[in-house]
Length: 365
Image 1 (cartoon, rainbow, N blue to C red):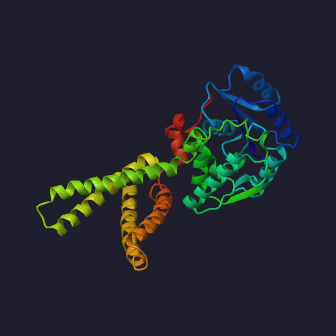
Image 2 (spheres, one colour):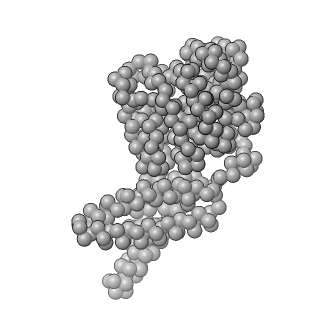
Image 3 (cartoon, rainbow, N blue to C red):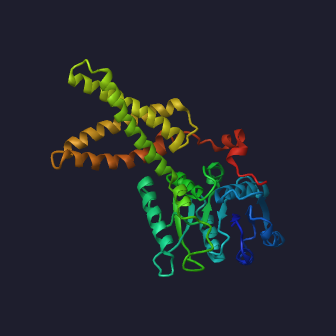
């Protein structure tokens, strides 16, 4: 087991030191602690982690868990070799050393898989917001990726060598980083789930730095941005339809509606493509290829919608049929755009690091 344990730490308690000692007692002694701008008050604990033999790096100011994980991976590559597998674990006492060992052993047996330590949220001692938040996120993940994941919010993860470069390039500096990485890893490698103990210090999980509203918006950022792009595209469709109807008002009613509908749909499709490329998925791929793939999807979705709504309209009101079909196609379109339209760009992560190291890596300062 040669994995490097990465522990992002923000304002850690003595639990961090106990955790490190327990890890070392189990033979897990390649540990990187990332002090994410905890400040002078927590310096004794950070220094104690260094005294215990951990590699310790610090951010001058708090930059978020995602940035800390990237710094940890970068440091692990510098200290232990470019191609190392890593295990991320939390510093707040919610992960037990024996569970980290199980994840490490599972990763060693499954070196090409992403290992996730999954918790049981059915217990009465689990905070209500944690139970609801994880169940909801798991449903969103399943809808968006077609993969069942019982614990999408787990911080105990075994990342194989094949994904460490992708992890360095992943978007997001705070809690959204972990969801973004999980979504991007879906379909690239198998997921292996390892049951771990569910540990909460109190009913409200007060040791967590997770902010329910702001950080939830970050976690669901991609689907929400995609939804916003779709709504913007719909608004553009109606607006352009009105504009073109005014321009072609001198034609017959049928001609005006047909021409206006086609031009409005083309215009709104272009708006949607631009927003999804730059806002929803933040792609850095080749624009021409992405536009071509998007056009294929756009036409296919339009034809599929028309055909299925016409068919379903035989058995139910047309408006209800359109709502059902278009809602289903919305989720299908999200998956296809993420994996095919915009998923083709940015795959050369090594090149990204060479070209923009200051942007894709969470450098310690």
